[in-house]
Image (tube, rainbow, N blue to C red; front, side, top):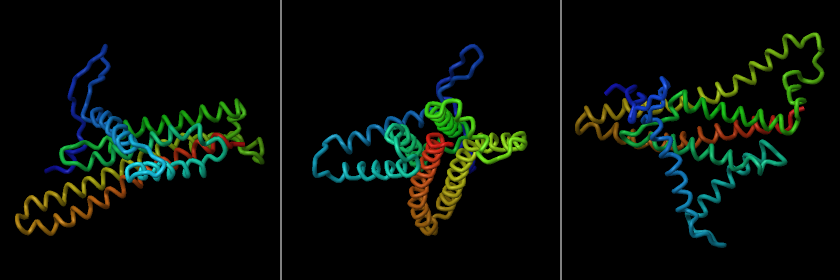
Length: 239
């Protein structure tokens, strides 16, 4: 009944490689499931593509158009090159959030390690994009134009810390939202279990909360996506 037990990472297949723990865990399992289920669901919805789309195709086209519009507004010219990466990040985060709502499942987006890796991946891609478009001039990002050179020892460390803090803010925002929502669901579900017939009232509230959590799952995936797009846009158009 401990609401924190649902966040415990458990080893499913122990793997030790020269002292390095590469075990396959419940977190690893649900990351794999997120990829497989997300890819399968998209394929099923668009497998019968037509000029006049059916319901499934319309849903995928609307979702893709929504993410495409976000990427275009955030990145601008040349956004098409980064759209597959941005859409994949959205689907992965969204599926991880949604799968965690099922009983006896595991929410890998509530863990610092996997979400942090996604954030660092986004940061790494933005750095590579910045170097590709600007070359070594991209490093001028840490010394904005118009700042007196004498202030460089102060400005550069501040800009560098601000830049490196981006993946931390992305990670903490998503992780904390998932943890708080799931703890609340677990506590209310405990009330339902222990209240007998009276538990029908908290059960109704749990159902409403699950619908709310689905909205949060989409919103957090979207926020994660739009911030990643903004970071890419800054790298492409940095001065």
